[in-house]
Amino acid sequence: MSSAAAASETTQNSDPYIQSLFAERIGGANYGKSTEIYKFEKIKRAKRKALADHPERQLLDFGIGENDSMADASIREVMGREINQVENRGYADNGVAEYKEAAARFMQRQFGVKLDPETQINHCIGSKPAYAMLPACFINPGDITMMTVPGYPVAGTHTRYYGGDVYRLPLLAENKFLPDLDAIPDDVFRRTKLMILNYPNSPTGGTAPKSFFEDVITLAKEKEFVVVNDAAHIMLTFDGKPTSFLEVPGALDVGVEVHSMSKGYDMIGWRMGFVAGHPLVVKAFSDVKDNSDSGQFIATQKAAAAALDDDSIPERIRTKYRRRMEKLVKVLRDCGFEAEMPGGTYFLYTKSPTGTASGETFAAAEDATRFLIEENGIVTVPWDDAGSFLRFSVTYIAEDEAAEDALMAETAARLSGAGFQWKS
Image (spheres, helix red, strand yellow):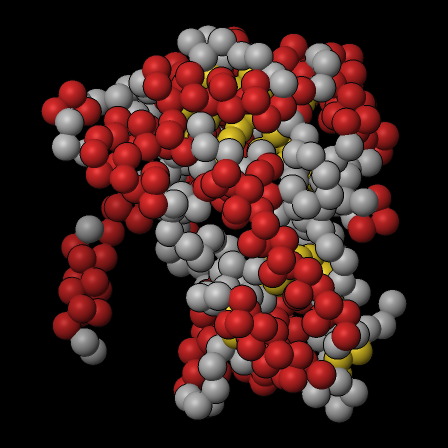
């Protein structure tokens, strides 16, 4: 037994009571004992095996879910200047005026939405904490959060932490990746406090027309629940002008929209975003936030404000990912996949193969993912929540367009010889 294992066993034997103290929301007395392997750990293991079995073969990684470039030089220049200003050294608490005002200008300029930066906007340390905190504003035991699936699970996790339940709204290709609002039972509506949407949608790439948002607003007023739209990918819209939920008449009466600096501004890791919309919801979020964190570093907020004021930055990023997506769609189509340009996001969501001509069968997308990694050296992310799909991301590392083309050529060569089949 290793020294680390021995120390761990000794600790468990000397402090057995700790195992019984864990909260039920994270597993109670069984916390840490689960042998379930999560899909991202399975992907990591498959990547290690592929590298060990084929050290000479480059992994083509379409599984990366974050921007591949650094933030624009102009943003980093502002950060470099502001980090040395003594007035930026302290706690930011619920944010500085410069960022809120820049967010208000951004919303007015991009979407025609006029917001009061004092009462209708507050910053968040990335959008993830916002989805952790918003359930704290509304969910009591027995309440429901409706969430689209597949999707980002954080709001649902925290809903359950507060004793609430999650009602899943499947996103199906035949419904253009929009939830079927008519299929929601009345008894669910009676308990619903929150509806979490995400458009442009990750991972499906679907976008929502204004008519859908109009239906949601009407429903929210009738059934009396709060709407939260996750707009993290909004600046990566490909099928027309980006649409904000808040630009639809009535939206400001029923909810908020959460924006992120990560996707549209290459600010992955900077942890900046904002919650905007209904003033009472923003106030409640701010109160919970005030008891959860002390605000993002002020220099970071000021750099992010400068980013929001420069529309050329998201335009360049959108152009790059649109170009890459068009190349990937063509390659996948040529290799037999049902691939179409997504309405937005840097994710391509396509039906998973069910097997190969040589006799391999895949019961789920996870099986196809593992085969792709181990046999073809191609990394994707599986989704089996509403059918079996693979998510390809165009955030792979490539220094220029020539490198993109070389990677696409290698991808086509590997996939064309795989003999994938799709059965209905």
